[in-house]
Image (cartoon, rainbow, N blue to C red; front, side, top):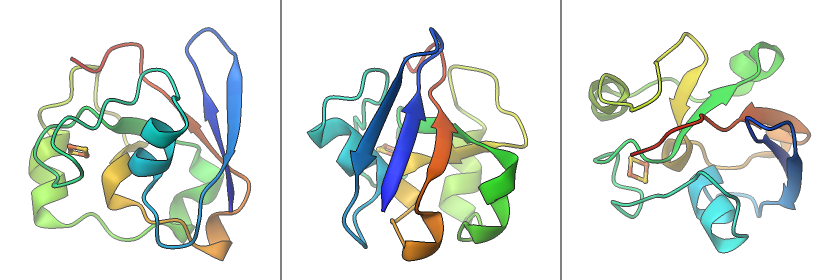
Length: 106
Ligand code: FES
């Protein structure tokens, strides 16, 4: 799938994410600014926080308990669009999804 990461400055990175690979992993591999992934994808750091555009919300997996807990610890404000990038594996349904990178992760 192609996932589009939009920076606070408005610049975008469109990256190809293999099915099953998390948005965090793909962003880190591709050097997308503002996605840190400190814990390596264990839902233990919240440095992979992204804001998913509402039109894609229905295609996302549900928020698990450990993700829910970490979303309380994001550096940038949590909103109803907040998710952890490491907990979202790419699927064909997410092709073309736009996510906004927060201004602060740590
Ligand atoms: Fe640590 Fe996602 S990479 S919570």
